[in-house]
Amino acid sequence: MSTEKSVSLLQRVHWICNTIYHQLVAIVAVYVSYIFFKYINIDNRSLWHNFLCTTAYIPLMAEGFILFSEQNVWSQRLERKKKYYIHGILLAVSTISLSVGIGLKIDVKNQHFKSDHAITGLASWILALASVILGMFAAYSQVLKRFLKPVILKLIHNFLGMASFAIGIASLCLGLYYRDFAGRVTTIERDTTLWLVGIVSTWSVLNAIVSQFNQLRSLLSSN
Image (cartoon, rainbow, N blue to C red; front, side, top):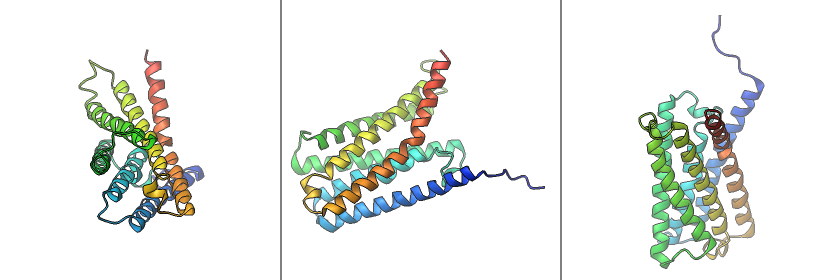
């Protein structure tokens, strides 16, 4: 007798959609990188600012969020502990990439974050850094539970991560209208980039939003 669990049609649809999602992430990462390298000289630091900051969000943060989804095909059989490690690595590398990318832009233009693009980018970086720090505390939440409930630590970590991602995507989209990018690409290329980024980023955080809601509900029900 087979011991395998039956798989519903809805579950199969979820798996197919998740597979399509990962393909879209790859397409967005490759397409946006192609646009950057096509129009900006390789020795121009603005190229590396654009590339590193975009990579920080897509694919690194995007994959970090979708990792815990039950519909995420490649991580389904991983133990919860391994998922936490992979999630931590993805978010840490993302934050490092973001830090270097922002640092290059400051060095190039000596900017003091005056534009909407720069301000939102800085806000996203601060939140990402805070999220990583809270994530390390959350990893030892059982040790720290006499000081703060584990669900609170995870709730704050999750919220900061989503806020960083959302504001970062907004900064990325604003950057697509700046001269460094918009002045070099066609309108179709810019609009295609915006749509692809929007679709992938929205899909990436759906599971995190559900997780945030469940954590909040758990916290309220325990009081």
